[in-house]
Image (cartoon, rainbow, N blue to C red; front, side):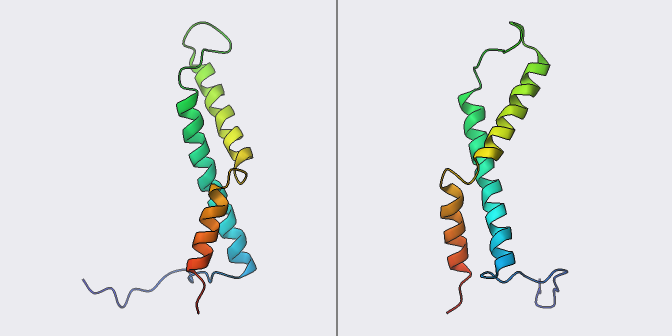
Length: 95
């Protein structure tokens, strides 16, 4: 399969520019939020229901939304995002 003639619809971003660094930071923060959400889901999977003693679907939805917002608010503060940003931004530097 010859892919030498494939053209991209969007121009490839150039790392090192202010816009690309901002976009990269957003993506690494989103990735960190996903990691935090997975950890919270695992840590809180056996937590008892907040509203009733029964297995209420509304309670599960509320807890999931709470953990999602908590992970989004915490993203960028754990260090995963910074390590990933540093690593990816160094790979884009051309000597």
